[in-house]
Length: 93
Image (cartoon, rainbow, N blue to C red):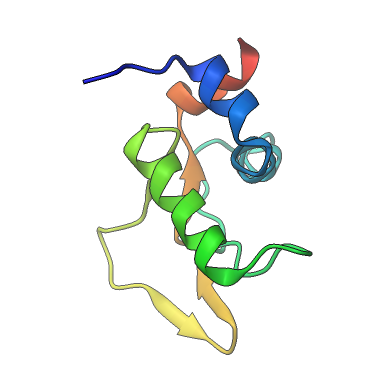
Protein backbone atom coordinates (compact mmCIF):
# COMPACT_ATOMS: atom_id res chain seq x y z
CA UNK A 1 0.00 0.00 0.00
CA UNK A 2 1.34 3.42 -0.93
CA UNK A 3 1.10 6.14 1.70
CA UNK A 4 0.60 9.73 0.63
CA UNK A 5 1.37 12.48 3.12
CA UNK A 6 -1.10 15.26 3.87
CA UNK A 7 0.74 17.94 1.95
CA UNK A 8 1.04 15.80 -1.19
CA UNK A 9 -2.63 14.89 -1.13
CA UNK A 10 -3.77 18.49 -0.64
CA UNK A 11 -1.40 19.76 -3.35
CA UNK A 12 -2.45 17.08 -5.82
CA UNK A 13 -6.14 17.79 -5.28
CA UNK A 14 -6.66 21.56 -4.90
CA UNK A 15 -10.43 21.08 -4.65
CA UNK A 16 -9.92 18.89 -1.63
CA UNK A 17 -7.96 21.68 0.05
CA UNK A 18 -10.65 24.18 -0.95
CA UNK A 19 -13.38 22.10 0.69
CA UNK A 20 -11.33 21.51 3.84
CA UNK A 21 -10.57 25.25 4.05
CA UNK A 22 -14.30 25.93 3.91
CA UNK A 23 -15.02 23.71 6.92
CA UNK A 24 -12.02 25.10 8.80
CA UNK A 25 -13.24 28.66 8.25
CA UNK A 26 -16.69 27.78 9.53
CA UNK A 27 -15.20 26.28 12.66
CA UNK A 28 -12.95 29.19 13.61
CA UNK A 29 -15.46 30.71 16.02
CA UNK A 30 -16.55 27.41 17.57
CA UNK A 31 -14.71 24.18 16.77
CA UNK A 32 -17.47 22.08 18.34
CA UNK A 33 -20.27 23.48 16.16
CA UNK A 34 -21.68 21.38 13.33
CA UNK A 35 -22.14 22.95 9.91
CA UNK A 36 -24.31 22.29 6.90
CA UNK A 37 -22.82 20.01 4.27
CA UNK A 38 -21.42 21.86 1.28
CA UNK A 39 -23.83 20.86 -1.46
CA UNK A 40 -22.53 23.04 -4.29
CA UNK A 41 -19.23 24.55 -5.30
CA UNK A 42 -18.96 26.58 -8.46
CA UNK A 43 -17.71 24.51 -11.40
CA UNK A 44 -17.57 21.28 -9.35
CA UNK A 45 -19.78 18.36 -10.41
CA UNK A 46 -21.84 16.93 -7.53
CA UNK A 47 -20.17 13.51 -7.86
CA UNK A 48 -16.74 15.11 -7.44
CA UNK A 49 -17.90 17.03 -4.37
CA UNK A 50 -19.20 13.78 -2.87
CA UNK A 51 -15.84 12.11 -3.59
CA UNK A 52 -14.01 14.98 -1.86
CA UNK A 53 -16.21 14.63 1.22
CA UNK A 54 -15.35 10.92 1.27
CA UNK A 55 -11.62 11.65 1.01
CA UNK A 56 -11.80 14.22 3.83
CA UNK A 57 -13.71 11.76 6.02
CA UNK A 58 -11.28 8.93 5.24
CA UNK A 59 -8.32 11.15 6.14
CA UNK A 60 -10.09 12.15 9.38
CA UNK A 61 -9.91 15.81 8.36
CA UNK A 62 -13.65 16.30 8.79
CA UNK A 63 -16.17 14.34 10.79
CA UNK A 64 -19.80 13.64 10.12
CA UNK A 65 -22.58 14.03 12.66
CA UNK A 66 -23.84 10.51 13.29
CA UNK A 67 -25.26 10.88 16.81
CA UNK A 68 -28.57 12.07 15.41
CA UNK A 69 -30.33 11.45 12.14
CA UNK A 70 -29.39 14.09 9.58
CA UNK A 71 -31.99 16.76 9.03
CA UNK A 72 -32.64 17.35 5.38
CA UNK A 73 -34.09 20.54 4.01
CA UNK A 74 -34.38 21.64 0.45
CA UNK A 75 -30.84 21.47 -0.94
CA UNK A 76 -29.36 21.20 2.59
CA UNK A 77 -28.11 18.62 5.02
CA UNK A 78 -28.23 20.62 8.24
CA UNK A 79 -25.49 20.60 10.90
CA UNK A 80 -23.76 17.53 9.56
CA UNK A 81 -20.00 18.19 9.25
CA UNK A 82 -17.12 19.88 11.05
CA UNK A 83 -13.35 20.01 10.68
CA UNK A 84 -11.21 17.93 13.02
CA UNK A 85 -7.92 18.65 14.77
CA UNK A 86 -6.26 16.41 12.16
CA UNK A 87 -7.76 18.60 9.42
CA UNK A 88 -6.38 21.73 11.06
CA UNK A 89 -2.94 20.12 11.31
CA UNK A 90 -3.04 18.97 7.69
CA UNK A 91 -3.74 22.49 6.45
CA UNK A 92 -1.10 23.99 8.74
CA UNK A 93 1.56 21.82 7.12
